[in-house]
Amino acid sequence: MPEQLNRSYCSDDSLGSSGELVAPSIERWPQFEPMLRLGVMASGNGSNFGAIQEAISANLLKAEIRQLVVNNQGCGAAKRADCFNIPCKLLDHRKFNQREHLDHALVKTFLQADVELVVMAGWMRIVTSVLIDAFPSRLLNIHPSLLPSFKGLDAVGQALKASVRVSGCTAHLVQPDVDAGRIIAQAAVPVHQNDTPASLAKRIQFQEHRILPWAIALTGLNWRQGQSIG
Image (cartoon, rainbow, N blue to C red; front, side, top):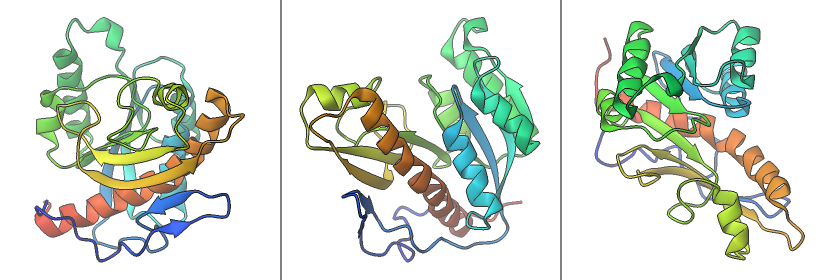
């Protein structure tokens, strides 16, 4: 990927009717050929996984999901994959003695599926350099805070405890330091006085579903321009 992201599709920030701010605006979708071959990792309900597939079905995101990997048997993401007819593999982290062993299995699974870009769409495990180095500048994560604030677990709870007036979500490239990679897109969400962790998380998640597919498209555009894919 080029050292500087191609920002030709990044217009001014956009302010929503409920006070949410998306930066950059996601009104224009990056276009490229051929379509991206995606791998997705999920641990829970899989709503972000579903949002990615919806963007693909709407012809907004030029991609196909080649492989979903889950680490919890019977999770919602696996059920969504069945509905979408997308291959799903269970890699239970509890059966691996070291994080690196799990990541080796992830790399093998994605390479076998001919995946070129991997998305952590609610993957609740820390990844190692084994996975990061296998997909340099092609491993994307969504985090429920405005990074660099509130990294790690329970970001929504951290934000409420800190009494911030604005929180949000960040789509970013993954590097060895947790939640510290290059930021691709963010959405700011106002925190209401009567917010609970559940109510704030719901509004943040709505924005995650908007920015993550777009961030995948921008990352894919830069990958296409940076290298020739065989």
